[in-house]
Amino acid sequence: MLEEIETPTPDAFVLADLEAGVGTLSRMAENHVDYLFAIVEPAEKSIQVARRAVEMAKKSNVGKVIVLANRIRETAHLKMLKDLFPGEEIMMIPFDRAIEDADRAGVAPIDSAPDSPGVNAFEAVVERLLKPVKSRYSKNK
Image 1 (tube, rainbow, N blue to C red):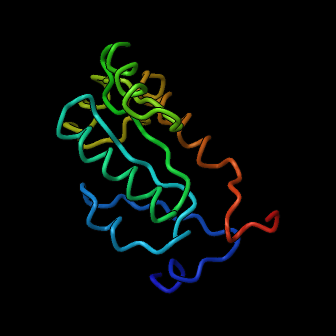
Image 2: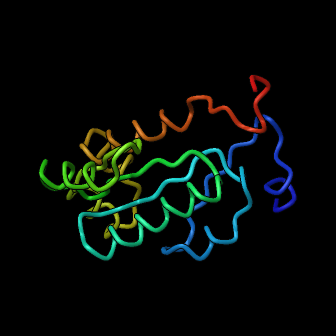
């Protein structure tokens, strides 16, 4: 499996959830991924880490950065994050009690609450991931 990740085929799709922070990002090679999500919540520590991650990703050119505003409760929170990440593509997952309930029950939110706002927003993120990206794997360079 690791060999497949290190030498992907044109149709390979790998989604990795890396540890919080910028340690892994600091070791990534240029053009290592197609998309890099910087997940940020409207809290100071989260914003600081996400800003460093976006800056590092841009400098090292590891992939297309998308800022994922997570657990958004108010329109003002989303506006604040858009202001703090100008020029970045931002997608949003709203705060959704159904996702917390599913987590506590040990089930997937898409199974327990398929029409909840959080699940619908996550489906939009997946659709965005499936859009072609100009990358080293693409024949359309």
